[in-house]
Amino acid sequence: MNTDIMALIELKDVTKKYDKSTTALRHIDLSINSGEFVYLVGPSGAGKSSLIRLFYQEEKLTSGSMKVGEFDLTRLRKKDVPLLRRSIGVVFQDYKLLPKKTAFENVAYAMEVIGEKPRHIKKRVTEVLELVGLKHKMRSFPNQLSGGEQQRVAIARAIVNNPKVLIADEPTGNLDPEISWEIMQVLERINLQGTTIIMATHNSTIVNNLRHRVVAIEEGRIVRDEEEGEYGYHD
Ligand code: ADP
Image 1: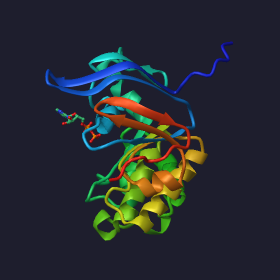
Image 2 (image 1 turned 90 degrees about the horizontal axis):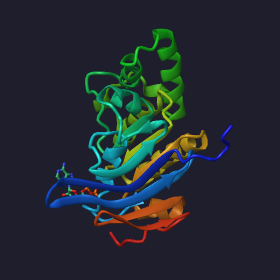
Image 3 (image 1 turned 30 degrees about the vertical axis):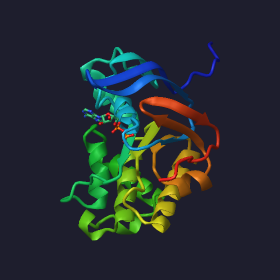
Image 4 (image 1 turned 60 degrees about the horizontal axis):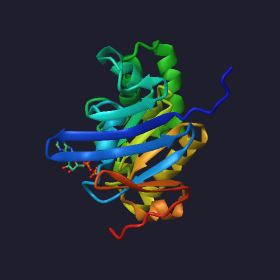
């Protein structure tokens, strides 16, 4: 048996161009192991969101190679994209909840679309809503929830199918500092349960106080990669 530790995520010489004059990522080499917590930092326009969109194939890489779990993204067929997306949970700054569904239904929907059994859905959705601290509001609609509560629902939805990786693009971007800390506690808990977390952020207080690996991107290049690094910018 091969006992080498394989990286969960591996990018080799990845370049992403949107058109001839826009190169968002240049020659990225990056390796992330299972269970890591990685902050992606860098100025606006540096390429953080472009990198995140490559992970779940909302965008295709232009050249280089990229692996996420067992998926080789350079060779991934269109029909396998939903399978890849099942192994990745994604959380955004603006929550993206379905307004006509309750908190419970928003989370349950992610299981329904992959054909899980209703009994299993009820048990698992209750469990993840409890994990994010929102079980008592599971019958509320998004417009009856605060921003922090909506983000908890979005996180519950992102992890309900047990993804290997949770990707968060500025998850605290719309939240005040106290609520941002609460959301970070939830992400910490999820990471401690073994889920790999990649989080793009401009929140220097969080990065400097809740230390994890920091990967800094500028003009499409990785310019810094440090264990327990600092935020390092003044914005
Ligand atoms: P960040 O997330 O760090 O702010 P982005 O990945 O959004 O950076 O942007 C990196 C570069 O790619 C910028 O020059 C941006 O204008 C460009 N870009 C991002 N998305 C697109 C797109 N869909 N089409 C064309 N150019 C884009």
